[in-house]
Length: 328
Image (tube, rainbow, N blue to C red; front, side, top):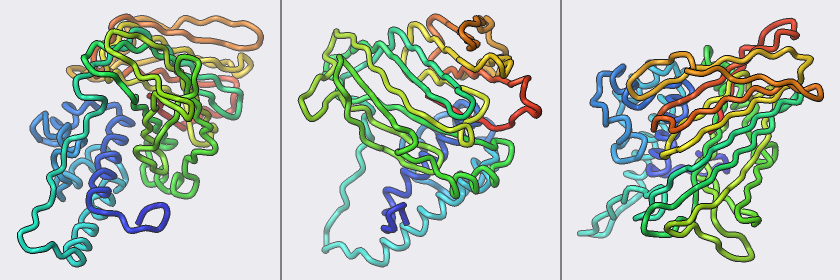
């Protein structure tokens, strides 16, 4: 059953499984290749599973849940898929000779398009109670077709060391669209958005290059800035900020801004397709002004599929927090 109480189709259940798998893999900071290796699968298998080219299997669900320490979250998505298949087998009767239409692999963007991120700036600011996250990206279309949408993800995990507790927390306190207050803009125009996946602790959203007043696609050879922002309370976020490089990127910048009286300290790690987590090659640069402490970290031409994680601790708080969150 979905959030509206309607029965989920097998196709929707398979997509839910793929989204759950991707969320836990990224929360754990593992590349698709690393997860496949840990599970004993071919390196391409996880990619096929997340893209929907392969349907969920019992063995894959069990192993991935154990490997990612997902507290049965991935396993439950597989059971939902199996139940949906049984339900459809019982209810659907096709006319003689009818053949179901094959599923076409989803194109993330327009066929023939190729997006390069010329500059990527992410800013996280904490006011003592909630985090406001703002992203600015300069996109260039190096393909042959106009781009009409751009995919973003929001994923949180408050208790990554305790999946059952984390899952229970978000079932009781799901991340909602109202609290996120998502806004997006391009060329001075508000961008419409559509939810692709809506889970308790994971959202996947299409930002659309249009609004009620018209369309403004990104044409071949053009570059354009897009901006989007949202808010998450610290009861659902936490003390790390992760960036995943999914498109060719020329420059990546991360800014963390905290109240100076919390006495924050920051460190970071890098994970690639071929190496486990290691310290960032350069440290974040600190600056203090107007009661705020800002940490800025910049890298040029980050590796595709690399993940950069900045973590922090507030030394002025009596006890360090173990909560965590993720932003992409």
